[in-house]
Length: 450
Image (tube, rainbow, N blue to C red; front, top):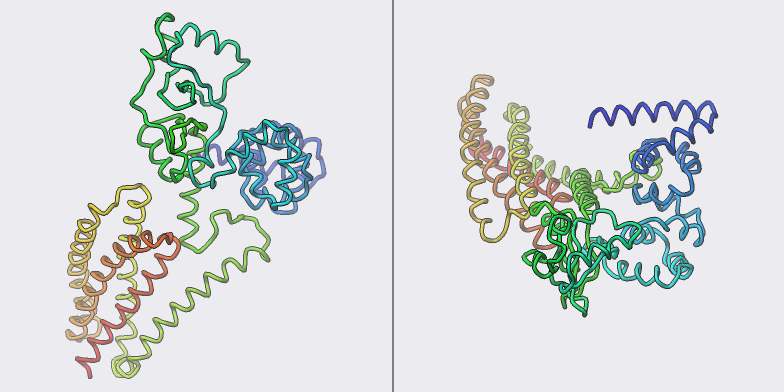
């Protein structure tokens, strides 16, 4: 991976130098010698002033594949400069799900115009995919399936395949259906190639692999592929009628997008955020999240203000306050991250939630007692006051227990009300641990120091 990144960066540096010098012939040659994914990576890694130049230098027959690899923002920018005929030509060599993703970046009236320009067969096939949201199995599927009947012999199937000039990519199974196109089973190509040609499909097909329902969420589809090591899987409607298939390359995109979403959501950013977007577009998105965090900071500050008199009497409290809040925030983040990951992987459910919460409380208590003793001894020696050591120890145990409870319960609750815990969980958790840490520490200090 590191070597590939170095190669990409080296190529990007060479292209940048060539662009600066105006030697566009060299740029075109270097650019079109790369794979579509590498071209897209280089475009996304370039400053805005170079992007449109690089896009214009991409060979016309490769534009569709490159566009399919770009993020939504860049797709929308490049598509915005095209008419309907150009979009149709650009998507000719793409799979149905990739075309659907691209068309969804267009305004509604432009999308309808593009569909009108397409021939009837392509339009009907594409509309079948676009009928479903992009985050369910129907939005991921391709319609490029090879189907066979169970009554055929393997010899007939082999002769049927030889009539094709090529078979769809990622084809590891032939899909067995009845005359009503209802899914029956799968015939693995490896079985077809090594079995007696006189044997029937019915004898050799696999019937213990369930198809994927068309409305299955994409995250569940990704788990099924991961758990079963699938390369492709059939997609059916509620009646069992075959609609298409999903391939591993689309599932990898789902996994990557989910990982990007979780990572970027923790900072309040869009998963499609452009690294090199102009500041005028990037700044407002960040400003909103900073404003939300500012509100939570004022909440914590208002709690501290309630104990202003106590802090004025015992200055050491102001020095030690951040320790209690920080330890609670870190412990809560550990629990929150663990639970969010478990939810994302489908490991956390109603049957084990109570056990998980109880386990996290035990961990919070154990770590609270351990580090409370350490901090209490350090604070007592630092300020020559054993009473303040006892106060901060008690506050730390309270806050770490609270952090463990909130860190475990919060993502479960947010998932239940259909809010992404990675998006708002960190902010809520930090606010709670800050407030509880300050209230417990300063409240106990007020009781003892009056």
